[in-house]
Length: 326
Image (tube, rainbow, N blue to C red; front, side):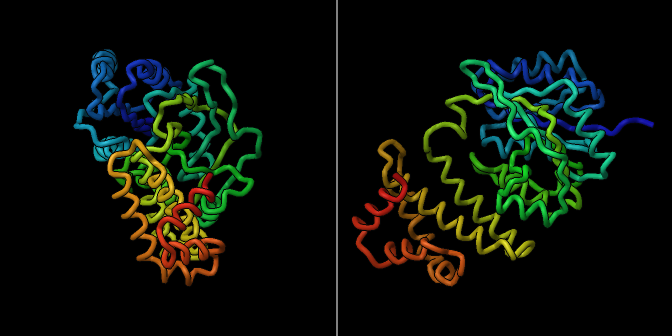
């Protein structure tokens, strides 16, 4: 009986320094029945050439080339063609331990899980020092509702919103697509997949290596792409309103708080083009939801900020926001 295929998706943009290590870590997996889908997202460096050289040596590799649209659109293109019964994601500047997918798929099958998550190493790009992240806990099992609850509350358990530390059953992974933004797209995708999964498991074995780079999307200073935080949070709220309403009000409060945070970042920015226009959009979005927000019994101190933004002159509420997020 043949082993199930794992489709491993790697979105690639400006990672020529790292992509060889990433690809080799995947091709050398102890679990051999894999399909490696490399998506060149219009990368201007030599990443595509490197991918093509590996594809000539290993027929398990498929290459997609597309105009630059961000990691979300690159992953979506791969999900459209993925054939595997299971789906995994690896970032192009990261790498994985040799037995990662053998350990994950074995535990998934043994426990009849739909999604599994492992621990990981955080690797400092400048010193190459590795630190185990999220290890040393008992194996954790979640139902769909328990998983959503943990994603909403972030208590002392370990389920998180990274797609790269996980393996998904293929029919669940391919049921959804990433919202085409350039940051935080993992968050919504995990909420969606967990919302339909019957069983999720977390193990404490570190199997993924995350390269912590100062200029990466998520570690860089505030930039225009991070406005996506609001879009993603809105989409999560809409999902919860229908699927898990008991956590909707808390997440709506988080949405409001994030809108205030982004609004302040835009107002204080001196380098982002059209920052003032984007700030005006966020402010109008906040005010358009004013009534709904004020009726949210969990809104807390955000109520005061809502009143200030609605009724006070801009110079006053702008100063209050600056102090609030200093």
